[in-house]
Length: 279
Image (cartoon, rainbow, N blue to C red):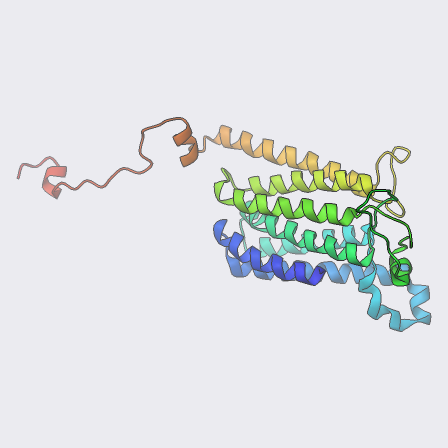
């Protein structure tokens, strides 16, 4: 499911890149480089954390990709972001517009990843008595992810997948109507932060860290940072637009009822008449 999410995200990124007026080929290359950087970083981190065991069982390295943990996800995300930023600066890509083009594909990829986590038992939910609770019975889920077996759990991965899918659709629809480059990326930060914070309320906190005596877990802390960053980005871009005096968009002119044409019609008079020379 994660691989399917990557493929769907890459295909969607080709469309959003054209809408955001970014080179689609460079966006494809950026995504591939970021993906491999994230996978390599996660693999090296796993090897470093489990070196004593891997020396005794070197064949286990082939199965390390099956391990799902918030620490690995965070490390991979940072490595991928760093590689993407380096490539974008090297190719002199417009950072704000590129981020807009990647927002919806990233949300779609996360939705697919969460559906895979639901089927594998990774990132499982807390114990529940609701009718739609999911019960895991496969020993592999317990071995790889520590999933409780035989106990009804919240299908929180499905909640997260639905939230990310909805966010992706909204960003695709809103991309052509953005007023400034970077607005869609700011909305992704805001939506992803809210989705993560809310769904963590139904996740089991085992291995996810804690702050304020358990009031917040690790992903929720990241979610709060996402929302704060989104607010700063959106407000700062709006302030800069007002200070620099950016011209209003077509939509803003229509809402204001302006009759001023956006582009003057060509003068169809003869050249001599334009210059004021009598015919």
